[in-house]
Image (cartoon, rainbow, N blue to C red):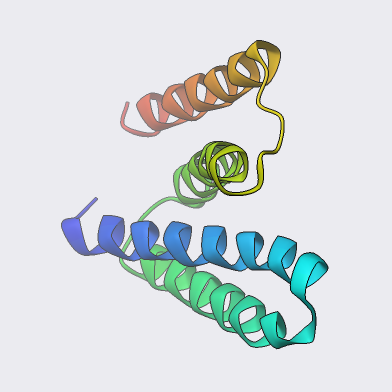
Amino acid sequence: MNFIAWAFLLLAIAFEVAGTLSLRMLALHGKRWLVPIVAGYAIAFTSLSMSLSQGMPLGVAYGTWVAVGVALVAILGRALFKDPFTKRMAAGVVLVMAGVLLIEIGATH
């Protein structure tokens, strides 16, 4: 896989996380957060498709997108909104990321 594919995937992750965090802001502060939600998800899915078009395998791209997204949303949810982040939740994030690592390793062999 090439650098461009990974760059698009990182962009997809960043905008998906921004869109998801904006969902919480919508719940707290109203409809003005609809634009960041729609824009975040639109850019995220477009960037994910660009990553795939650069040759990244679907399982690797989607698995990485989900795992990193879940981890970032959980951590940022704690930092920004005081959401719970227990040891059990942290263990779950580690397990998801370990699973994605196994998928990545499997895709290269």
